Image 1 (cartoon, rainbow, N blue to C red):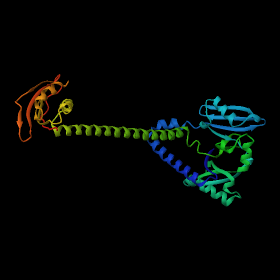
Image 2: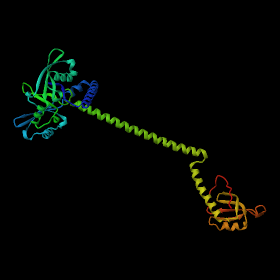
Image 3: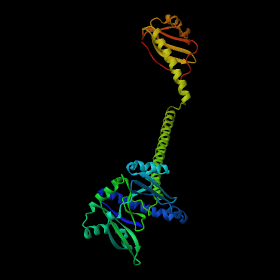
Image 4: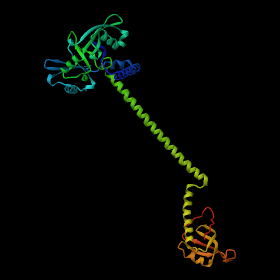
Length: 373
């Protein structure tokens, strides 16, 4: 016996989302089936999702696990049975609740039955056909019942003989409560046939033989793989952008250094040496500005190889030699030319040379001229 359709009252948005997801999974699985070797499909299709049938036998609740490995039956006292006990029983057999479909067996007399003949070409619209059958040919409203159709036999070549199962929700909830369960805790309703064998009649969710366990795993694998691809793509994009940014920054630094070297023609090493030399020259000028009298000013100065030559005018040029020699920074001060009076400046013209102690200056790029008052 196979469940060919199901209908129940559901909010429109949830129903639309569920229908879209089912359409997508069927489309994806159809492509997967075309790509998978036939031998693999035969093996996978044989792995149907295990079913658990539950019914009451006097003061005992019977749980029957049906899987490809065989059938296992367990019995629990009626007063102790509930969803938690069912979960513990499944765990004892190495299964979780989400790995099986659970269906309580409801007495056959609780259902309203109708016989249908449905063309095979119309099976895709079977849920709508069943809804119309309920509205036109039964006293029930779709919101008050659960219903579905199962295939009984093939009639004409293109027609299926079906049984339309209808049960009121209040009756179904009462039957479930008698087993210690709720409709939210089961996946389908089952019913006994003439031989006493239980078969699914009304499914609450898509988990039948048409979609075995490997289908659910394949869809989950697709979702996980899609998420992994997105995360790897984002990581690769971030890494590539970081590499590009680092390369651009390095190129900019090199370009700035090259442009600076191109403007003055001095290498970085020579620039450092020049900075050190500048520090020595500044030290010399600082000392001269400290020791030279205010009535003295310079017209020319030269600094090279630790030797300083000064020319200028002073009101007491003869005393300058002694003043320079007394500095801790200078030594060996001597006049390089005779002191001559200048009528225009009304001061003595002088020219003096001396050394910087320890040779603390190096040869600068050129000579410097300055004056001080």
